[in-house]
Image 1 (tube, rainbow, N blue to C red):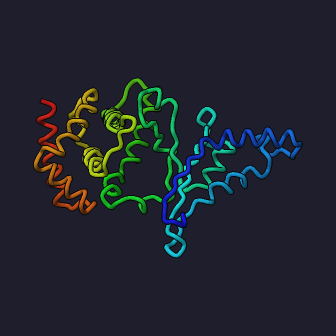
Image 2 (image 1 turned 90 degrees about the vertical axis):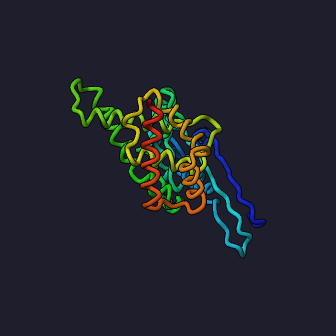
Length: 255
């Protein structure tokens, strides 16, 4: 840190760390508290995680970022250790076993995943395009749970379920295959403008791969990609041009 370096520390995982500390504390006959954990288990974790910091230039300008991993039992995010760590960190990504087993990778539950940093860590481009994504996913998950108990669904509900399934499919990502911010912008723009409607669900991944390739070939998409990389902002005229081009692109794709 004092040499200007940025450090990432991954704690894998603090649940096992807490369980081991609980076992030792009970053997030493320390008074147990909630879930039989000793009273200072919160201090134990905060002492580790609060060392994360960003130094100013007078002290070297380096930083430490802590990424703690916590295991939940049966997806219970309200258990003692998860809530402790959530209260210490600047947000959390909640991963679901059911989503993982269903092939949704990364298996992030958008409803329970929160960032306290929020848009401050995003460019204007991504912040603008991802604004409605969480609401769409929340609506989809709510309707999906409801549809399991209802046999006759209205057209609006069917559309919400269909659009949500396509969004989830579009967000599937291969392991060790991060996307450039410009590529993320194209994907999010497709979602933002509801351009997935005419694409069959079983061709969504094919569409995404085709779109990614075309951003380096199609003259219009290539130009917009360069603009995204340079200014990291979505201008109204660029939005209009991109929407028009993607509609043509999708029409040719589904032929």
